[in-house]
Length: 154
Ligand SMILES: CC(C)(COP(=O)(O)OP(=O)(O)OC[C@H]1O[C@@H](n2cnc3c(N)ncnc32)[C@H](O)[C@@H]1OP(=O)(O)O)[C@@H](O)C(=O)NCCC(=O)NCCS
Image (cartoon, rainbow, N blue to C red; front, side, top):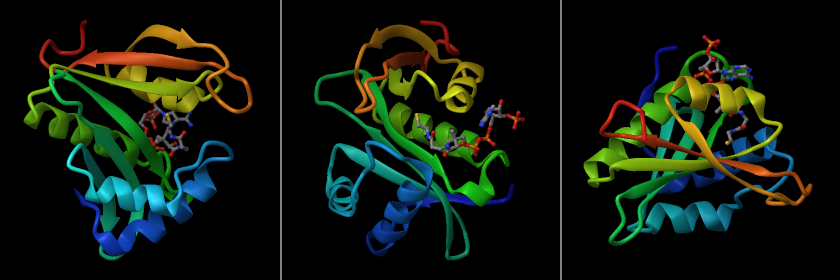
């Protein structure tokens, strides 16, 4: 699907919160947190957009003195899923991490979120750990990592 990937504008935080509400039942990012992330020097919030319509968003974090970046959030609004938007956002988050000098990128995914797991596996992420009882429904998080400088292999 044709869309532009660009930094989120301050006034768009509310739309991100609305997408978050539609996409997740648990552990939602709230409006204040989106605004905090937008202002943070350690985060980049990107959106996939068509004109004024936000299709999805992603957040990548960096840490001081670390070569490992973290995909903190990724979501595509329901009507626009399975059209390549999530993949485009993920690619852009990885490019952002590379521009910071990151060598690797990590994320967590719910053990039952098979769609997202497939996206990450197909994009070169590998499971390296599980965090039991990570989510409020007591399910585990799968921790995944990708090398940004070695074509995926860790
Ligand atoms: C997971 C998510 C970000 C994927 O975004 P998307 O735009 O729908 O995904 P894409 O169209 O870019 O998919 C690329 C590939 O990933 C895999 N994939 C994505 N969603 C899938 C699903 N629900 N089931 C199976 N495979 C899936 C497929 O291999 C797909 O390629 P294909 O459509 O040619 O088969 C999106 O479904 C979403 O926002 N889900 C709800 C929130 C969420 O779970 N976020 C991730 C938290 S870790």
